[in-house]
Amino acid sequence: MSMRIDGLISGMQTEDIISKLMAVERQPVNLMKTRQHTYELRKGLWNEINSSLLSLKNKGEGIATAANLLTKKATSSDDTYFTAGADSSAADGTYTIDVTSIAKAQRLNGTTQANGALNLSGSFTIGDGTYSSTVEVYATDTLSTIMSRINQARDNTDPSKSLDVSATIVNNTLILEHKETGSANGIVLTDTVNTAGSTGNDEILESLGILNDAKTIQNESQAAEDAVFTVNGIAVTRSSNAGLTDVISGVTLSLKQEGVTGTLTVEKDIDASVKAIKDWVGQYNSTIELLSTRLSEEVVKDAASDVLKSKGLLRGDSILSNTKSELRQYVSTDIEGLTVYKNLSQIGIMTSGSDYGKSGKLEIDETKLRAALEANPEDVAKLFVSNEDMDGDGKTAWQEKGVIARLDSQLEYLTNTATTSIGGTVVKAGVIQARIDFESKVISDLADKIEAYEDRLATKQARLYKQFTAMETALSELQNQASWLAGQLGGLSSGNG
Image 1 (tube, one colour):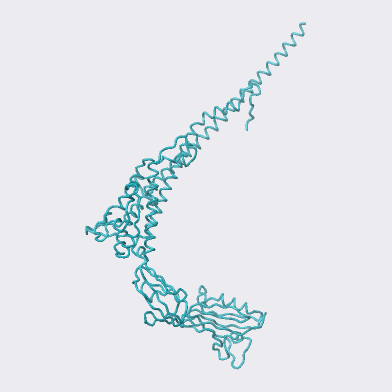
Image 2 (image 1 turned 60 degrees about the vertical axis):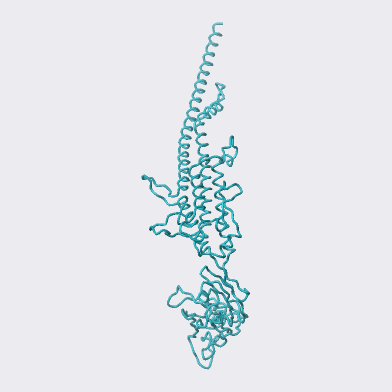
């Protein structure tokens, strides 16, 4: 780096002069940075709108099918007896459930063993009815070692398969238990060595007290059993207690206790349906309010914060204006072809009257909504999710679609992140997404211009310092020459004297 001489000869404030000159030169950069920040703020606003529209889309998907909207609930008279869940296909009704026995897994107990090495040496085979594994045992193995080998056992034929058998130790006693309930799921055990009339150290399972001398199970503390119960007097047997989907149509049943009798009630879950609709209406109102705010807010003069600087950047924007109008139109226009309910107001969802409908927000008459869901649930669902060709012309016009189906198509049109080609240029298919990409491109282009301009400014600043340094150097040489001449003239003057 070249040495800078700051006015040592000329007395000029070089740093200050160059700084002021560069400040003038930097003004275009500052303007570009200000413009770039404005685009960043505008992009943030578009992202905010996109997020709100996506939230509305997600809330709509929560009630996008009749199954989601027409939920059922299954209530047990005692959750300690049994629990259940119901889907929309379940028929309303009351079921008496009498549980004789619940399904159990087979459990086998050994005999108490000594601490430390068991001095057993040999092998045995253990199986779960589907897979089996040969377990090796060595003289130095403890009971804990054998337990670990059983729990880590893999099928002899397919080592990727583990066994549905678990081993534990209680009070130095090995316990084996099948992981699956039901009479068909038993533990299969074989000692490799079978010496009748005695128990050798190579007869592992017999030595552990799991098998007897006849090589049959010695102590079954719990037998494998099926669940036995009745539903409205109809006898049912199942190998499992939980997730029983094939007993009552549309109901998933889980048994908890045996020797009990209780009732299960299946009915419409009006509360869940109302909540789903309320959540959707709430998000719709939030989105409409955001669009209205961005469309109407005015620019703040001399704004000092980004929040204030963002105001007015989307004022009167045509995309937002069209989006708001279309959302309002889609929720308020009758669905063609429906007979019971044609519009939301008929089920208690109306445009808010507090501002004479100016805001476009919706409000709910919950009493009317609940009555509609109770009386005609399928027709309420059609109002939201209908997506059929009602007039038979071979296509489904938006006027024939339910409210959620209409909005979903429009919201996809606005927020779709897929790409498409327009005139050879690849852009986002979603209108809002395309606008966000446009803002990003302008920001990136400005960043490139700013970087290039900064390079030119750095070059110009270096040139100014070089010029001022050259001037100071020249002045220094002139000063030295003047001093030399003065000295020479002084010498001549004294010589003449």
